[in-house]
Image (cartoon, rainbow, N blue to C red; front, side, top):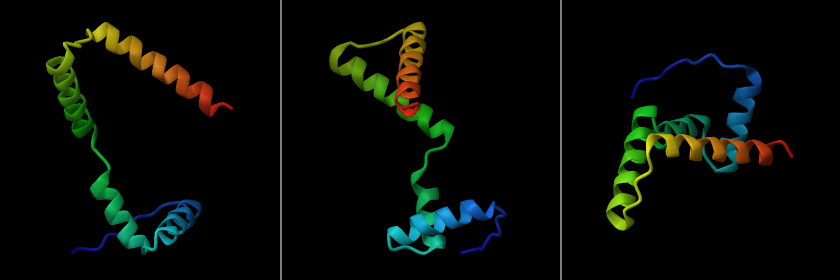
Length: 85
């Protein structure tokens, strides 16, 4: 296993260390687990496509690109409302 030095703001380091400690992990173990669980943009797109295919097979749901865009916009709008509170 190789080590890497990463320069981040002190506040970010303190926050990450607190998150790690709350889960009983070292900062190193927490970051390794985080790297294993986060998806890349390509992986997220692949999973979204798999979900669309499963929905289409299951119940025929197959939104157009325009419908997907409208749904994404509506979700973004609702999330913005909730986070603004």
